[in-house]
Image 1 (cartoon, rainbow, N blue to C red):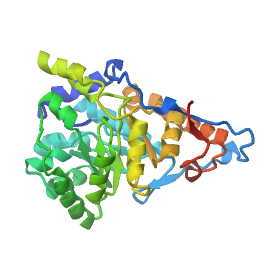
Image 2 (image 1 turned 135 degrees about the vertical axis):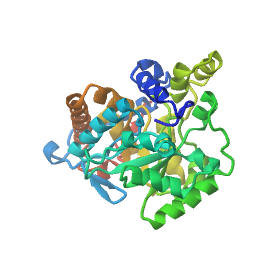
Image 3 (image 1 turned 30 degrees about the horizontal axis):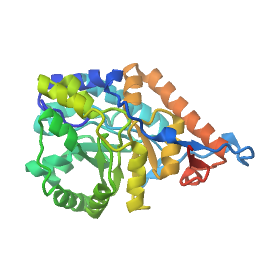
Image 4 (image 1 turned 90 degrees about the vertical axis):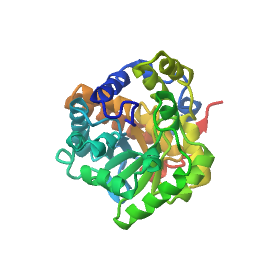
Amino acid sequence: MPDSADKRDPKSKVQHIEACLTPEVEYKKTTGFERYDFVSNALPEVSLEAIDLSTSLVGKELSAPLMISPMTGGVDRGHDINRTLARGAEKYRLPMGVGSQRVGIEDTERAQFFKVREEAPSTLIFANIGAVQLNKGWGAEHAQRAVDMIEADALFLHLNPMQEAIQGGDQDFVGLADRIKSVVKELDRSGVPVFVREVGFGMSQDAAKRLIDTGVAGIDCAGAGGTSWARVEGICAKSERRRVMGTIFGEWGVPTTESILNVRAVSSRIPLIATGGLRSGIDVAKAIALGADIGSMARPMLVAADQGDEALARFIEQTLEELRVCMFGIGANSVEELKGNTHLHPVV
């Protein structure tokens, strides 16, 4: 989860978890996936059992193009959830990210609540800090500390201007692109790929182009249609003014499908993760057919992990089975064959 208004207050992290476990945080607007449908292939010429879901990201092999999105950390409950998610990621060879590590950098005693490497020794793990902190005196040193804190393989710099505005947080984003560029350059020297991700308000073509120009290793376009962080902040707000703002801007954002297409209109090559309202293996397949390399899920994984390892395993297995059957139904033998698949069409 991205930074909250009460960044040093452990209660705020727990409040975010509790809020995100409720359906009230969901957008009313959709991701746009319902506007696309796969045309069934009556003669797929593939074997369901032989379909290969494997892919790679930042040079690490993955069993499937499915990621566990950054969500939480910094408190006992968040740590328990992250450890469950890490065990699931390790078991199914999926990448994962942790929530914003700002509290762990500012309060070293809380750094322990982000560590999951013991549960996932071979997993591709993303560290995570708010990009806006680069305008508050942070730099490559802080970014590296986040990576070292959890023995991560890569780093997310998350962008959340609308959330920051609603919860009264850090609202100066002037000159941020240049500071991102500097951090990307510095961490590249130590072999740490830096991705930039939205937190669920989506990505315009202009923003995608400016981010790509910073030299980032990849983008998570995290679109609208799943969890609305405006709604989350409204639910968790301590003042009536903030609650009202959360409601007014609860539908703000570029839907996930449009966000995918916006990034791909700028670059056909930049590694692209698609988050925001993916709820099934079919959604993952559509995201990849539209241009994403990885489909990522947050709230569904959180809800399952909150119920324990078995519930998370059932959800992951169901999602991967849905993805495999979807690929079978259109005759895609591999993830590469799914990308840009001609069987995906707009619904008329």
